[in-house]
Each structure stands twice: as C-alpha cells, then as structure tokens.
Image (tube, rainbow, N blue to C red; front, top):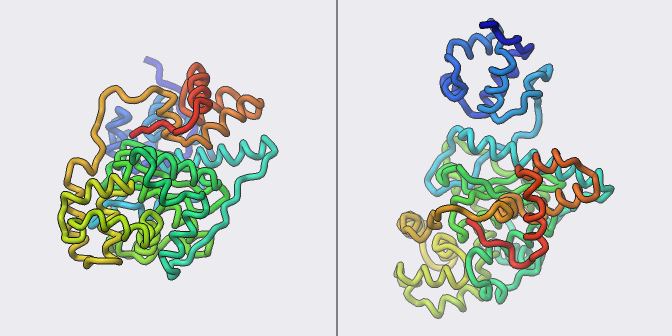
Length: 393
C-alpha cells in the first residue's frame, strides 16, 4: 500500500495542540487510533504524519487542519483561571471539555467583534465598575439598577428558569455575551468569564440547576465590574479553596446582596420562621419563592444570622439533595431552542443579522452557530416569536 503524503507540520504545533486540549500523549494516541510511540516520533520531529492522520488529530484536538501549518504555536489570551467550583474543591488541571468550552467562547466573541466591524456598528460598551471593599448592599442595589430588575419582578417570575432567562437577557442587553456549555462536571466548573472588554464573556455550566446558574451569572458579572475598576480576578493562591480567595469572597457577598436585598429579604424571611431556626424543610419553598438556591440563602444568612461553619455544613447537605440538580430528561429540546439557550439571544440575533445583510457567508453562519443552514428559519422564527426566552436546561 502506498504511504500518504507527509504533512509538513512543525513538531511544536503538534505538542501545542495536544497540550492545549488537555490530553496526555497516551490519551491523544488512543483517541486518534495511533500508537503512542508514533505520536511521540511526530512530536519530536523524527517522523511526520500523513494528511489524513493529521486531520484525525485535528478532530481529536478540536482544531482545524489549517492551524497545524502555522509557522509556530499561536499566542493569545488564555482565560483559564480559577473557575467557580463547588465548595471545598481545589484547582486541578482543566479537562479537555473545559478547554474546548473556553476556546469556543473566545471564538464566538471574536466572531461577534468582527461582525460588528463589518456591519459598521460600534461595539457595545459596558463600563460599570465595583471595588471589592464596597458595601455589598450598595453594590447589590447598583447592579439591580443597571438592567432595571426590581424585587417585585423577581417574585413574579413563574419559575427559576424564567428568572435565569430574565437575568441573562438583562445582562446581555448591557453588552456582555452569556454562553452556556455542557459536558463539564460541576465539580470542575460552575461558571467562568473573560472579564476584559469590549464584549466580555460569561460562561455557565448547564449541568447546574437554574437557581445555581443565576447566582453564578451574577457572580461572574461582578468579576467583570471588578475588572472595569482595575481589580483583575484573583490568582489561585496555592491550593486554597476558591471560595476562600479575596475577590471570590467579595463576588459571593455582592451576588448574595444583589439577589437578596437586605430589607426585602428579611421581610420575606418573616414568612418562613423555620429557616431561621435551622429547619431544612422551609428552605426549598423559600428558594422557589425568591428564585435563588438554598445555598444562596445560606450564604446570605452568613452575613445576617449564622456562622460560616454552620453555613458550610448545611450547604454540603443541601447540595446532596436531589432537588438541587435539575432532573435529566430524554430527547431534549428542538434545535432552535438548543442554539438560543447555548449562545444567547443577542449573539444569535447578531449572527443572523450579519447573514441577512450579507456581512458574513453561509459557511460563517454554520461555523458560528454550529448548525446547518436548513435550521436558520426555525431559529429566526423562535427569536421573533418572543418573550419569554425558552426555558431550557
């Protein structure tokens, strides 16, 4: 059998692609159906893969074939930092799924930036800032005023999904991209963000319950405000728990004050006296009433009623209850709802507008939305059918 034409690829590109995908050499070889010693030879420059073999590696690393023919590994912003995790879990090497989600978020943001330029429209600008030493009550009120969400709105939303969609659309309306991703364990990430602008990005893990995603959304939004004020997200401090880091603690306090303003929250608590006595059965109806998680309520009570040790003990117990995580259904929603849920109404609308105004090609649309063109009419129809945004897991 004739051998394939060898690909003139720099060995450093092969090493970079594998490592940036978060794969060990043996893992990559297994996924690519290649002998580990063969992949090692390619990375050392002792041999070269054929074009079909390189294409298969690209599928494993989630990279286009063209990237392997760059003169050197690309350098750019890397958003991998201390992701919002479940409590008590220290940082670890990011999984391939998380790395791919981060790359995808950055690709979408760059696509949006370029499209605004092609359309001749200014990029949205979000300049509101916060300082980690500010009064949480003042910051929380300021955050509510930015999108104009009132306490009455929060109580009237019919479900946690409706609340998540309302908060998300309000934040997107301020010039922030909000994406949702799947396939990542909650133990690794509940949410993360690219805080520098224009067009900062928030990424939510849709494996989380809607209550949890709401808190993460506000938490990451506050990180963007910190960055606007010159306070970049805190570096991971050794193996300290993320919730014990300075800016993480401040973001948690501010998010809790945003979702549960002191005066209104205490007034609502009067109808649930069992919560203040440590009763678990009252937490669920209160959480459903104000559209926050039990852990968020307990977080708020840290600053108002109970100690941090009791909080951590209760939070651990409540995370183990089945209602905390949304049930897994079969079949899933139709494609148009999946696309809008994953990428957000603002991003999808921008891409479709660019296509309609001939600013991008049909191939660009397919790359950005990850769907075939035959689905565009259904997606457009869903966007026009209007409020509320589809409630999805």
